[in-house]
Amino acid sequence: MEEKTKYEMEFPIQASPSLLYQYISTPSGLSEWYADNVNSRGEFFTFIWEGSEEKAKLMSKKSDERIKFKWVEDEDSPYFFELRIQVDDITKDVSLMITDFAEEDEIDEGKMLWENMVSDLKQILGSA
Image (cartoon, rainbow, N blue to C red):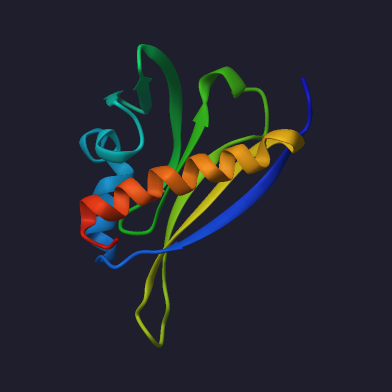
């Protein structure tokens, strides 16, 4: 298995942290922008895209702040993806921070995918 590289992205979003959290932490919220459909059973989330399914385990979450998943197929690896809400103490600007991992030659593709998905999320939130 090839080493993956961690990368982080920041997306300013004009929405309250509690509203944004609903879209990053619930199956119904995630299925509006991240996948075609999302189901959860306990700590396991199933993400469905055009007929293919990926299962992820919920590793941790903190209300209105962050949620962290690990793909079940990568369970023995250190890799995960995390969606974190950051609020600037002074300006109160809200950003969605994304941490993910990809193989070196797939980082640009991964970033582009996140940019497209977060663009959809911003449209849903009226923050585009």
